Length: 111
Image (cartoon, rainbow, N blue to C red; front, side, top):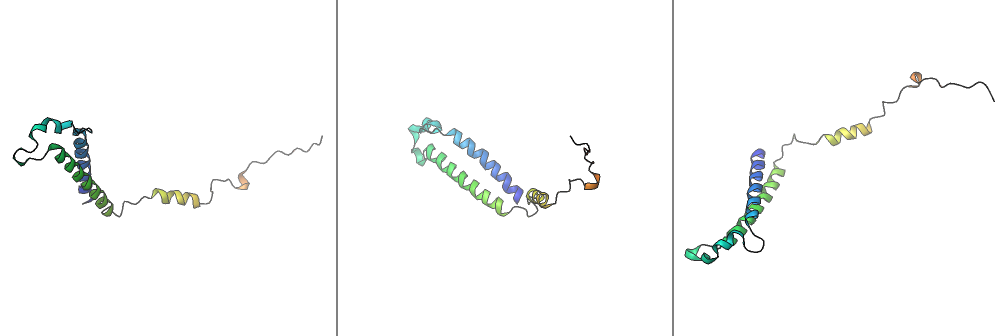
């Protein structure tokens, strides 16, 4: 189900992008070529169809996103944060023991 919803969301995104690119923001675009036959034989204007299609795809994408979040597999947790927290909480083991540190030279002569 999760994989199906992800593929559906990708397809909806591609269709939404194509549908938006077909539209012209000033009211022209694909709908300007059919301006003479707006209501012939009950056909809606192309601008209305494109607008309703855009809203339909936006709502579909929003529902898919919510369903993807709801059906997320339980094994897909982010363990990177837990690993980071374990490294922070772990005591510093990189320090060398005092017995392995080199002895500092001592200056016995006084000036």
